[in-house]
Length: 285
Ligand code: C2E
Ligand code: MG
Ligand code: MG
Ligand code: MG
Image (tube, rainbow, N blue to C red; front, side, top):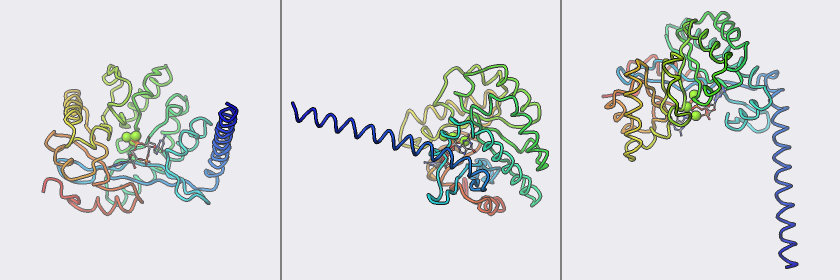
């Protein structure tokens, strides 16, 4: 008994220390994020999006990276939740919008008409200054609003407050495209799709990844593509990792695809190079 008690105490101490270490790491990330904006440690990687009809690159998703002075490249999953908790996602998100619009406008001056998709956080969508931030990013860059796309998730639409609805209505009125990211993993009430005039559904890579091996994933993917088309929406598949999946998606008449097989997120130049080719990934060849 004595022994067990001592072991229990040790376990307890172990957890307390681990929790403490996590809290410290959290705090240091938070102050690091604050400095990162000032010091220009953020950058954007772009992942190409390909038309399954023509094989051409039609746009790219902007994916935030933090080039930390000691830790190197930090993935968004490690810092975006902390940026959301602390509210820092608002200025960081504004930076992403500005930079992504600047890049897409530069592509346009280089003769490449590519759209850019930017991920939004719930907090950004809930704030009254979102429309002003988007307007400024477009005005400063001179980007055609039709070439900007904002990615939301289903869970962000559960809070259909007046501010959220008004933001979406005004963003749509500007001509900016709206897509639902990770579609199929969240909120199952689909009534918002028609009501909010969404443009695209991005099928979650959880379904796409095992499409050729898992019958349920194949059925769900087919159903989402059909639903998108009957509502006049574009169907985008995320997480395409091999040519078999790509061909299966073509067979299902999916419109756009994105994934490691078609290009990993990387510097803007990689997207440019692919976009200058007619059918760089030999889709359907
Ligand atoms: P997401 O928007 O669903 O982005 C797709 C994620 O899947 C990216 O991870 C991308 O690198 C990864 N991915 C793309 N193709 C494949 C594939 O074929 N296989 C696999 N296994 N993964 C693939 P990443 O860059 O780590 O971003 C993770 C998430 O972080 C994003 O998921 C998005 O929710 C969030 N995020 C990224 N940038 C921003 C941003 O600027 N603002 C906000 N609020 N969130 C962002
Ligand atoms: Mg996304
Ligand atoms: Mg996604
Ligand atoms: Mg995701």
